[in-house]
Image (cartoon, rainbow, N blue to C red; front, side):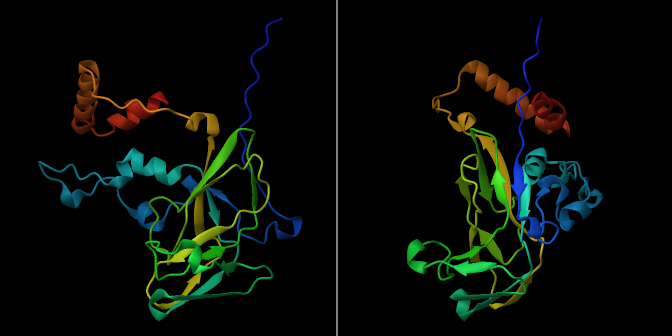
Length: 237
């Protein structure tokens, strides 16, 4: 009897303590957490139409949108107050929650970093993340979502073997002042990937004539017709 190959299960699991379920903010698909400014942006800005400008906005830019909607958003579990003082040299945090939400790193651990004088801090996360064997997760600041008074540091964790909570170092980026960061605010974007797919070697050389023709054809198609990338290149995935 002929058997179809078993379809590989690709599930990322976000697990919390039973008492936290429904209390702390839950992870969401990145495509469901688009910022308000992006939702309000028209696909075509009629006020900028001209013979040299088609008026298209980034809402029609698939690379921009794909980056913004890939993976999952891990949010802040509970509301935190950040007070930034002394030209960014001091960051104090407060919260009304029964778990630690922010802790501090020693500045000596990142001496000379570009964010000085802001000290390194850490948001505490209460979701453990599990991926199938061979899969890791890239954690990075939510893509194309600037505007928060902080920025988390990017990192990769082998979430197929590391089942503990992953906390997120960050730097305060806003001017001195008191900032309320609401529960559910996006902290990091979580992008699972298969480690074997990441093990790619590089071929660095001059392009061939055929490769140059292909590049030029794609470039001309892209600028000649709105939506070519969406309909052709991206549809081939």
